[in-house]
Length: 114
Image 1 (cartoon, rainbow, N blue to C red):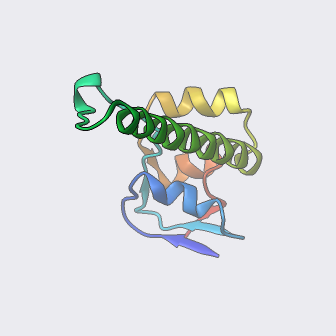
Image 2: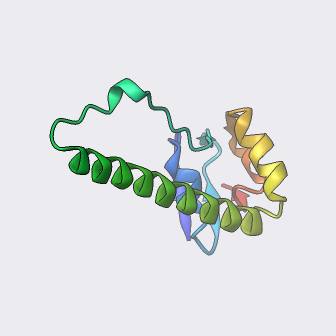
């Protein structure tokens, strides 16, 4: 069973989905957010041989690909648990909702408000 009291950060809604019974206090609020990755080319500064730079860039690309793959897996699990299609879930996350406890239950993020 998972219980949330008060305001929840981004990761709490995901953790609640792993619980058998998802309970929210009446004063709780959820703010689920989509994964956002920002970078600029100038943030990647490498000094060394060209082969070292190439390996470093490949590491960054590999880490980014792994993160995106994990995000896709989480979206699939959330979609199954919440009972919404991935597309609906992505649209909802893109709006960055702030949900009261009753709204979170209605949207499928929790089972009951106490």
